[in-house]
Image (cartoon, rainbow, N blue to C red; front, top):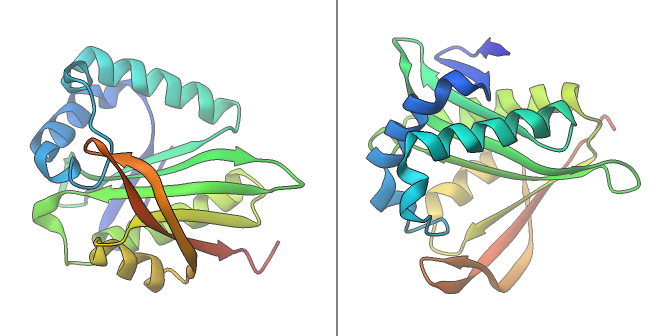
Length: 181
């Protein structure tokens, strides 16, 4: 599925994205490793990206998660960011875990906020969700600003919560409650 915002094109996982994703993650590898788990070398192969996409497609079909990749309208063949809604849980939880990333060179232009707003609206049509949770490293101010612009509320600190670049790092926990649930 593909949909658009004012400046962006968003699409869900499909196998044909393997080369574009490989380029995106390879180009941003050193930047992402500061904020995300370190991936093994095989992650940076077309075969591994294709396997990941196969799993993402299966998870979307089961309504277990949702993944969106986005590009600028003027360059639709270049992925500039990704958004995930992992562990979509039905009632009584009706929740999901939200994550995103953006090409290092394109930060500060509002692309990620624009894409995330659209993806949240899309996932609310895809699954009945009451609560969206997100975690962000304490030194990732840009990501904190994105969450706050999206209306997420700070809920607290998770100490040593996620393994990032070889050490368990503290993360802020944010949440957004769907007012129309």
